[in-house]
Image (cartoon, rainbow, N blue to C red; front, side, top):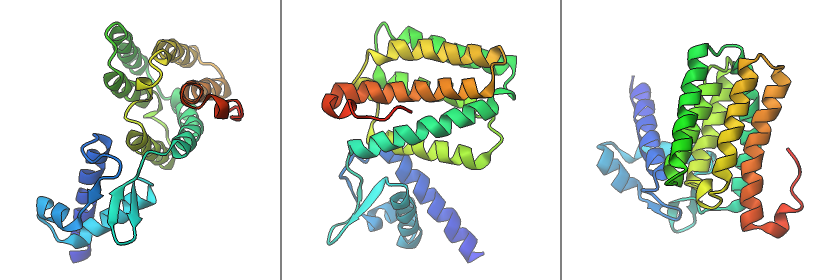
Length: 227
């Protein structure tokens, strides 16, 4: 019973810290003081330490000698790796979910995309990113492979720490993105081959990475492999 209670508390601490990292309350480089967090959550430092270890395994937290735990610094290499991984994972999850989606599911996805289009006039990259996540979750949420869903969500969380919004750097990409969304929905709606749906979803994610790399690191972008 004690072990179960400890596990529950470590998960509480894990989600509490992770939400603050994703929400930029705990910014890159922020020092995570175990005692302070434990006091805030009214628990011992043991479950907090377990939560920190889990976040370290996900790359959201790093340990520095004589310093302790800190929120990981922004690293464009990590960002590129996460985006490349997500293009594969999300593309596969979207394809596997495609045949399970109902007319209502596709209508809901389209409605979110319409809201994204409405934000373009007075562009808010953070609001656009939140809607973007909602759109994609509507398409891959019925993926029958729970492990794949866990991996997709883990990469979403990692990206939330590395880049609050890619669209802050390349706002012009947003216009292209919503058109690609409609194309993916249309492919699913018309019963396109799963390989074609997967390829479209992967290209969509990769295009955002390419736009960012061309904007921030034009020399490096020339040597990027196609995904």
